[in-house]
Length: 119
Image 1 (tube, rainbow, N blue to C red):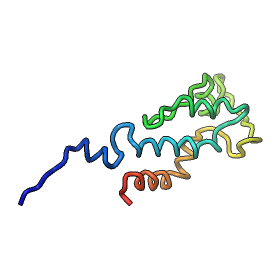
Image 2 (image 1 turned 120 degrees about the vertical axis):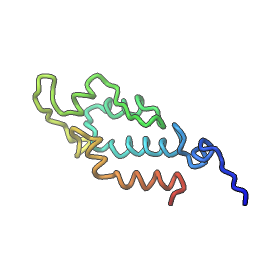
Image 3 (image 1 turned 90 degrees about the horizontal axis):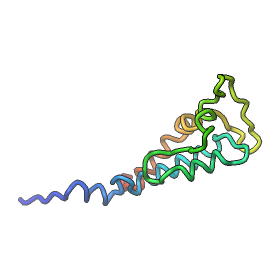
Image 4 (image 1 turned 135 degrees about the vertical axis):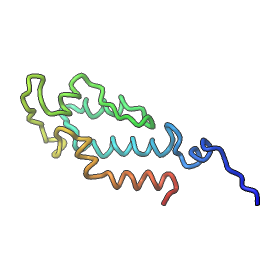
């Protein structure tokens, strides 16, 4: 009996699991999309910075505005808590990625599995 094993890189590529592949692109896109309603929104610059600062497929979502860090952690540099405007995004607030993950992690994993052909 002869067994032929394909190279690991080829097997990963077929499933879209290579670095920067289809599966990671789906995950990155979904993280941005599902985080959007939780992201503080005054003029939209913070939300748009996530789209501009993220290389889809890199596995890293980056909000690249100078105030992004303080908005994420919900405190000014002096330690005072933010009072987020919820006119545009009713659920806006700090730790938007963590809150999104708690709510949508299983959905994102399911989409990743579908993209990889595991379901």
